[in-house]
Image 1 (tube, rainbow, N blue to C red):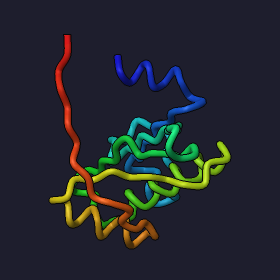
Image 2 (image 1 turned 60 degrees about the vertical axis):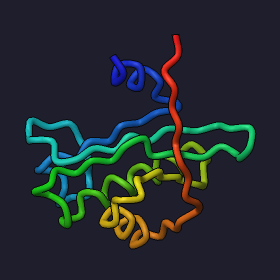
Image 3 (image 1 turned 180 degrees about the vertical axis):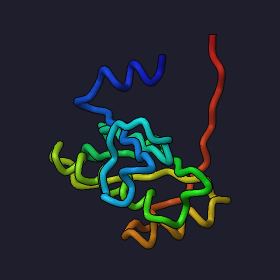
Length: 123
């Protein structure tokens, strides 16, 4: 259901999928090959900052990490954001994910701030 909603709102959301046969070409395309990674990027519009793209999730199969899959997916998200006239991409990541932090920094991302996230179930 969540994916269907995101898929319908292609103006503000995009999911790119990397498959094994497309990784070496830098493409993420539909295929019968196994999925080795994906990224969800969406446009975030807040009162406090201008519009920006935010990575809702990025996952690369453990066996494919370190082989350029994440870089291809990240670049596709950036290209999509630029096509929407968005010049910032934001990524939230857990403080314990040191390997992910190094990955993002390697591709030009810098730490903006650290924060806590609170949630409350309401009815």
